[in-house]
Length: 476
Image 1: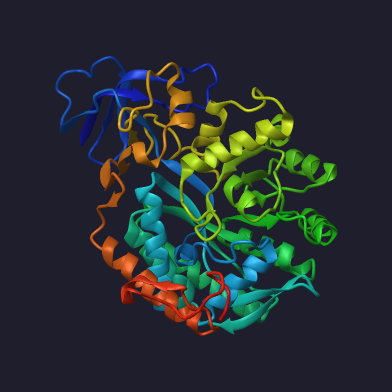
Image 2: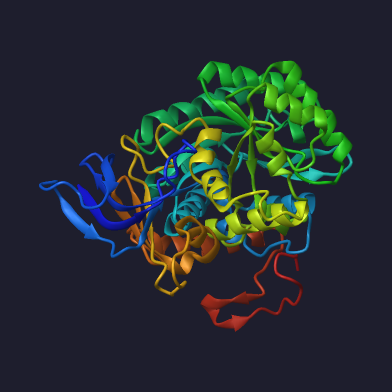
């Protein structure tokens, strides 16, 4: 149990009439649930320790509604490629990876999220089918097929990290026999339900893959998995301007199959038609926005304010650690905010409080998790970040939300709590395997990538430069 006092609280409420901030206290009970909060001083006699924040900001932990947590070892790769070239590079680098490698890749990625204030994530697991993109057919071509433990070890890492996760699994229905796909999905689901602590398990999901498929039957199979296991679905869609008409033509495959609805989300959704936007709004589907990766890959700028005005639920995600490179939710908010304002030539088109909502409660709402995470409210998990705007100093606080979104960054982040338990302090993870995870990530990623000729330009462990001279991420 813990009570935070002298806190500048940013609750992030779903009620637009609720105060955007207050100076006061928050109490967390022994189960890690927010049990009380309010302005001023707390009631006398609250049990547990007291943490006086000295006026620092207390806000909800960030929610990344679209993430690929196994990619932390591939930062800086394919630095000048757009989506398809970058995807193929990642597939090539993963060909040599084994199930135990995926455990350490995922653990390192999860701990990186936590130390940066992300306390809940939707995680697209690396499929057991390692594939590259074929431009001629606009489909994924298998390079190597693994047993199902290639996926379940990623789930083990999620659980061991302490990060709350939605686990997303691809059916691989075009690379594997249909019965095997459904059996594997059932096995992964059972493993998640049996092994992940209930408080960390935010549910399962289908890793929607119609954008990469050659037949409408993929949408029907995904609907079957959703109905059988009671899970949602999130699909990458119209993410890039490349082969745009091919992508757009597949939208109706989802619509005709009856997949669209409150349990479905489109990731990216940068280049939709008017018809697509209308159908997403009519079916109460959601859109997940990856502002940083869309910029890094030259994918384009999603018209988020248009989706918002159409009544579509919009959440934000940090996407790959290999295409956002720094898992920084503050940077993600600002890149998103500034690009929307620049495109519309209007600084009022998207407010700081709105983009904060999209990376916390809005992301939770888009995933159907707003009853558990995303805001500082009684009854929710005490997933909290403490941000000190005086270290380094940001000056007078004229508007607490604006200071938080526009002026604060990871350098101001001092503490991260999950369920009221301190998991990171400063930039340092408090997880007992944090240092080992970073070391294992590097060693195992280098070994996997070497299978296809990728060699680091500089190997710090050997304290010597490589003889390889091309750009990092390009095979020698």
